[in-house]
Image (cartoon, rainbow, N blue to C red; front, side, top):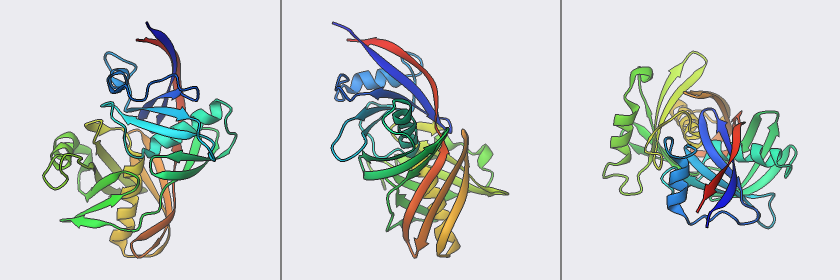
Length: 262
């Protein structure tokens, strides 16, 4: 027997997501095949991932995120920003919010179509050759390169994501290049298994890599340009410790609809 599900499509700097209000528990979060089918760009709605907004105690809502492959994912920064916009559009919040995600508590503020999302503190990093490796809610590899506009991000990112260093779980791969007004970043995302137009946790990891490379401490505000638009990252750095981390950028509803599922 089929049932009708209301869905919404949001995008944050080109990172696009299917959003479902699941406060009544009508969507089966364990149906990996259904999530994969909905995220398929030819046979479904299409998206880099799917998110469920759920009720939880002591928070405005809970974020449950799934990659396009149907598997539950780690933290998604742009997804979190889109879910905040969704919560505002549903009337759950007005401007400020505190919600629960897979990596813990997040605060956020929304004004019109801009969401400023608090991210987790980061207290350690490692090096893989010249590349920086950090976990900003999801694990990221960050490599500084030249001529990024012409780089084969799919080929090179796929190779790093699947190499023996990172094993079956893999890693998200970011390539970064300095430009006149900030930095340009392109990302190969695990779970999507392709280059995406933006990656929030990747932009944060890239900005932290810039700060680590500079050797300076203090407050940083770093503009990160991605294929889908502009993001801004801010934090306070002492040594290799990062606090007061925020990811800011657009979060916009694209369309909404209903779909029959069995």
